[in-house]
Picture 1 (cartoon, rainbow, N blue to C red):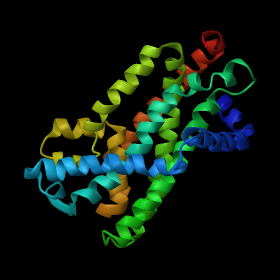
Picture 2 (picture 1 turned 180 degrees about the vertical axis):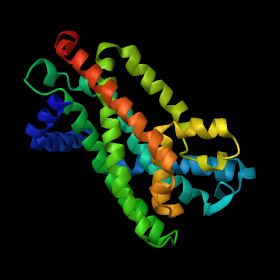
Picture 3 (picture 1 turned 60 degrees about the vertical axis):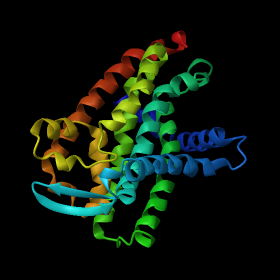
Picture 4 (picture 1 turned 180 degrees about the horizontal axis):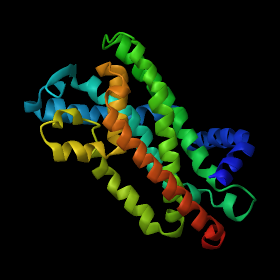
Length: 277
């Protein structure tokens, strides 16, 4: 852990510069360039909204959320899904692109002296730039179109967003080196992401599972669900994160496990990465 922190301390400016270059490289050659960062998520959200609102008509247009028998709120489906999709777009890109990051940037491993751990970090920082921009657009929509008033609860974004960034950076300490060793592992991650989407509370509320303890616990063990609920706590439910102490405890236990596994896998594999690549 000390070695990883040391690498980041000395390469802070390079990480920000490489993250910027990563975005430029992503949209290079496209006529509308960075606007694809908005168009692709907007189209995805529209497709799911259309399917659940217009296609499956018996679901209705709204989403009612209850917890322990207490009504938290009743929201139109598009607004509810929007707040869940914003963290999901960052999470899915962080997982899939983070797993590929070492293989896609092998020149930093094989040809120059460059700390490998920072490759995963600047890849995530590039996605964070887009996430912050999409979050700002979401907030404008909530306030000026949906009519949801700004609230002191909104400051929880500055708790959930950095925590989400750190969690999925640490996760890539395991997935990126393992993907560099095996394309099967990389393909497996890409393949299971669609399944993970449906198992996370991105388009529905896990709080409505209070009557089913097994489902409630399974959802609580899903860190993606933790962040989807967190963003909705901040912008829709208007509830503080410490009102859900069990969720916080379970998440930080998982975070500690992910950190330990990340350090173990990174230190175990990083010395042999140049030979593999």
